[in-house]
Amino acid sequence: MSKVYPLTGIRVLDLTRILAGPLCTQYLGDLGAEIIKIENPKGGDDTRAWGPPFLGTESAYYLGINRNKKSICLDIKTKEGFKILKDLIKKSDVVIDNFKPGFWNKIGLPDNWFNKNVKNVVRTSISGYGVKGPQGGLPGYDFLMQAESGLMKITGEVNGEPMKLGVAIVDIVTGLNAVISVLSGLLLNKKVKNKNILTEVNLYNSGIFLLANVASNTLVSNKDAERYANGHPNIVPYNLFKSKNGELAISVGNDNQFKVFTKLLKKPEWATDKRFTKNADRVKNRTLIEKMINKELCKKNRSYWYNLFLKNNIPSAIVRGVKEALHHPQTKDNDMTLNLDKENTKSLETLNSPIQINNQRGLSKPKYPPTLGEDTKKVLKNILNFNDGEIKKLISLNVIK
Image (cartoon, rainbow, N blue to C red):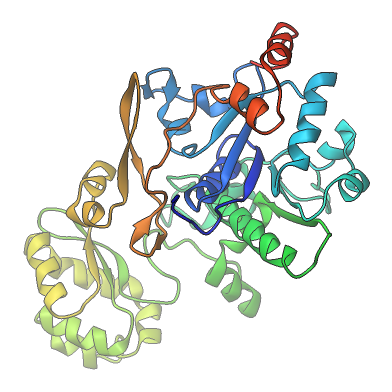
């Protein structure tokens, strides 16, 4: 008997590329959905070529966000390809795309076509800015959204230039928002019969949403947000500090913790100093108290401080490089990396799903990311009942690959 997962039996037609969409559908695949990734015959998903590094002919970027999928290479601009697209939509539970708004109308599949030809399908569209507003309908990119949302302005050194985050955080969160949209649509479909569900997420909204407490501070105070580098606008000490041999991240979240912290630094008098007694006082005098803390921490190695803080429940962390973090025992014990194998292909070590269900992350037998058009014939045969002759003809017409 096959193992049952949360989305077993759900078929997702994936017309996305780059990061937000593929990350979303990889999540859905990890939850058991069948993912059919439609790619254009002229190279497919752009990220296949986004290297180095490469593993074989595929970039590490592509391989990291496209496991548990089937790739079908289809030219939907041809008459035959367009018909195949429509037939696959009719056989799917979810259709997800990240084209500019108006794409479906442009190709001849407006809302009324969906309402007439399919029932209980969840449609999720990922766009740059959404439909409304002065920038509605424009394409969007993570880097630009970090700039426009204000994220870049609050990131970086206090007196430095605005700085983007080290990962495409807006794309990633948009992908997660798309997952929530799909799952919500599937649940709603059980309550509203014979009606299609249309969900929409966009990069701009995700960027604004990521402002979180910074946005709340600004809306309440009507004061523009400042840049605090590694610090926190509302908590002190909460920053990166230098020890004798490296950096240490320290987060003292309340006044009781601060009292303990000062004792560990052998400076208990700080806790009764009116400039530092309450968190609000420390926020006003952050430059002074942080300078004083740094002076004490520089006297010993970071491992000494880390272990001391750990024993006394003071939140702290040693700053690691990415390679160090990926090979750390905590990462390994949490099964946050996995190896994917495929015949005649080099083994792929990649990130695992962060979601654990019944002591398991993702599928028991996860599938290696597909090569371009790897599953075209299988999908046409098994889902649309095409025969070998029909497939051969489509290949000769450059409809499929």
